[in-house]
Image (cartoon, rainbow, N blue to C red; front, side):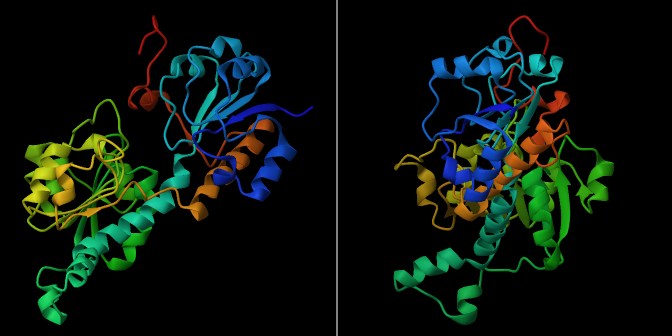
Length: 343
């Protein structure tokens, strides 16, 4: 008898994350319950929950219902992060694995971030805007304020799946790479070929700064105005993970002043209000949260999900999805323990 798996990916679409081949693999492997683009009604979810061994969902929006899931072995989040508003302590107590498809976005975001860095340093988008206005400068005159990525000091803030995918893309440029990640030990970072440094040192000494830290309860506006003031004149500041980790008002003011070059794919409010002052930052590169969600890359999420689902139904540990860890899960933004429990 096949394992029963609730597949409720909304807001994502089934064909967005599952290729035809992986959708066939999914149905061959387990008994799929729901499996539609529309969000599964709560009443129908609760009817299916007692027999479900796995829930695949975009976030956890079902409330405190784990006691109604005696067969549950895993919760898989395909939204891009760890599920919030989930009782993690109960999951750990019952050995329910909590998994995220976040690594499926890593290559997409890494490639885009590298593109933003080169674009900003070489003023590709800015030069395009000048040319369309008939204000272009040719040859060396157009390169007065540009520079290469080659041989530059690079800093990476947050060495998770996004940064680990970016790292090998930077190697051919002969850069020296420093890193700041308070969730990782210096020895580990050194073994990856990185120089662990303080956040202050990284911001003050890096020509290219990649912000790839996952948002947590500890790092809201971690990169404050005072820290942003440490960034070198004309350095490139690439914001690729979440605006949560930066004082975005200060970042906007400094970008408007031309203090350094900014490239950002994320904003505090999305869609970005039409009158937000960052839109007037002429030298900044603004991207409407497009680093991920590329059709070619999104199907990697479904491939990872089916691969690890195959392992789970065989009684084996997952290998491709990100596993929630007790030491970190309660530090992700808005995660919690059930009322009355420690944590």
